[in-house]
Amino acid sequence: MQVYQNTVASQGVASQSLLNDEPWQRLLADFDSHPPQVRQFLNCWNVASIKRKANARMLTGHKVPYLAGIVHSLQCSTPDPFITLRDSTGKTYIDL
Image 1 (cartoon, helix red, strand yellow):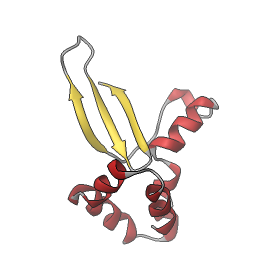
Image 2 (tube, helix red, strand yellow; image 1 turned 90 degrees about the vertical axis):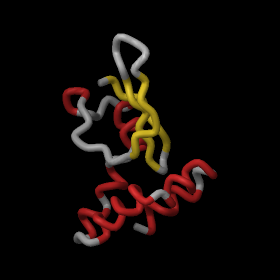
Image 3 (cartoon, one colour; image 1 turned 135 degrees about the vertical axis):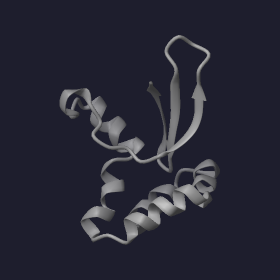
């Protein structure tokens, strides 16, 4: 996952610590055990690329088919709870 790790290296300390967490390492290991096309999946469907696609109105039906990340936080104090989902390219807020 060299391309993905290079992206991470430019994102700072928070992303580096995320890369070292066991859940994220397991996810990367799962993708590494598959053919290259599957490994490239994380490069196509990460927080940064999804934000770019959404801004360009390139998401069919305004839906994200897949996003791999770590739940950074869960906000339940409002009538519409949301989570903060993080990967090494950034974070996004998702309504539940």
